[in-house]
Image (cartoon, rainbow, N blue to C red; front, top):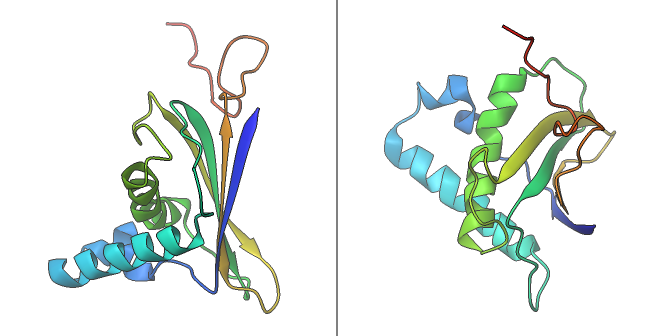
Length: 140
């Protein structure tokens, strides 16, 4: 199994990129925030030849110094420019559900503010051939 860990120190995407923030922010500001996130990602990628993942499990951890409630759907909005940046850099084939199984979570660590991206391939499967963490559909 190939694993790539990318750490973006002192960076968590701006909360205006969350699903709630997108509705209230001017589109030019949003484009700049997305570009900033992609540049932070490019700066954190290791030099040399990067691995290419046709299919991957991607876990994105947003590390915050303070504990507070964070909605899972808003965290997913913060992950979008990072996934787009991984596709632009050629690390991921695409960021659709056929190529990426995504997990996004918030972690609390005192005095640390960073983003961690863990990419693994192949997509880990449970014994039933279902992607790990996926909820199987009940029979009709």
